[in-house]
Image (cartoon, rainbow, N blue to C red; front, side, top):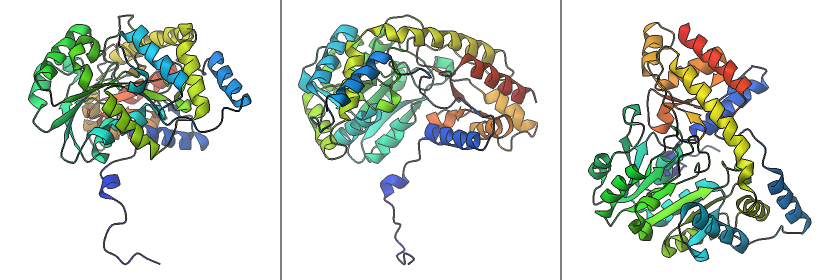
Length: 405
């Protein structure tokens, strides 16, 4: 029977957000591939390496030992202790076990954080290009994302004067992500100190640093986050991380966060009413990842470095593209504004937009990329080089052909 009410069935909350563009494009590429098309997908942000064997072995042992029941909501003690040790060893940050929470992937910890601290009308500063979910998660929490554009001209990094100009009495949270998804940009200590100086002047602002790509380091430069640069922010800073990228564990769904006790407890309260605990077996695997030999990261890093150099050099040799070297992560984020304009003028694409460009690539050349507008940066596109060199060579040949034609 048809709904006779004129009222919409769905909530304003869900109507205010969009499906994750990266997941949508990956699904579209998968559909075309299943239909027999020779699609090369460069959209998904996950390593093409298997989870290291010692991590899988720990999970298998947990299953055989019957570790398949509920666990504490915020994580098993062994994993939380391993996270505390990781922060101390890698980041020189001191946390108590009860200042740490384990979530179902990094995305859930960010979701929990936003729901725990944001109210309707609060503002969240999000430097663009940004990871696709930051703005939408803020909207679900009924807050207002304040997007600050940080283009290729400034290395995709937020400048102190931009941060200062964006902060208002309504600002509740600033989101940092370094190395960045989608650009790979990584802040150095000097840049972070300058941003920290601004934040010290505004004690009403909370700070979140998403360090998910910390170990996907393409330069060998030491990793720093905003809390390393400005320790005085500790009582209002939440550090977010996870095992997905460094240990090729995207499907295991384990993220974690550390921060002020009242915020972590509130995040735990939310989690108790949503997912309850993260998967028991995945937690054991994550503990093995953090406590085990870190040499398992090296082969991935070596491959990513080689691919990164190849992809950036290829893009910079193509007409109408400009691509910066990344500090970390496994993405390239070329500026395609000139190429898009040329394709539009020649009638190859109907509109001079990155969405039309991405459609042109997948429909005409069987290459799936993510348009920059998904990350708040119209005129760019993102490719993941977390795929084989063979795939990259063929995909870039196709993109070059698309631009030439």
